[in-house]
Each structure stands twice: as C-alpha cells, then as structure tokens.
Length: 97
Ligand SMILES: [Zn+2]
Image (tube, rainbow, N blue to C red):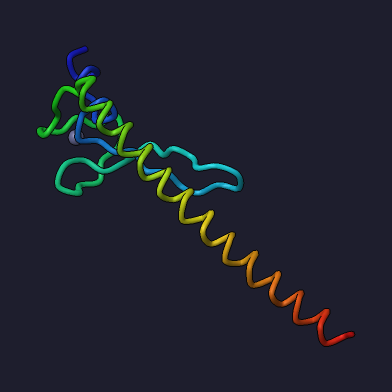
C-alpha cells in the first residue's frame, strides 16, 4: 500500500510524456523523473517526494505561461502569412489589369 502512494506518477519530480495524436496529445505510461531519468509511471524510485499543492500550482502556472507564449507566436506567424498572401494577391490583381 505504501508503495502505491509513492508511485512515480504522483511524485513532484515526475513529468508525464505525451505523443502527438491527430487532434490531441496522448498521455503515455512513462515520463521523466529527476535528473532526466525515464521511468514508468507506476515505478517507485528513490527520488520520490510528496507533490505539494504549491508545487502543482507552480507547474500549472508554467504550463499556462508556455501555452500563452506559444499562442502568441502562432498568432504572429498567421499574421505574417496573411500579410504575404494579401500582398501576393494584390500583386497578381495588379498584373492582370
Ligand atoms: Zn521517480
């Protein structure tokens, strides 16, 4: 029972691995532990530490910041593509007249 409580999946150092699916990311049964060690989620390693609410909030905040930065980058790329297509379209219509 104690071993179940100390599984890697609920350790503060565990980060689950995901693979990219068609429309979403699929969570895998393994991930990274402390010091970049790959572990199965139900393993129990010597680095296990209690995952505090404060630690979970820090990780949640980090994921939020990374997501917002990525969205901002994507919006900039879309804007650039839109500008290029618009300029190409303007050039084409100018030539045909
Ligand atoms: Zn671990």
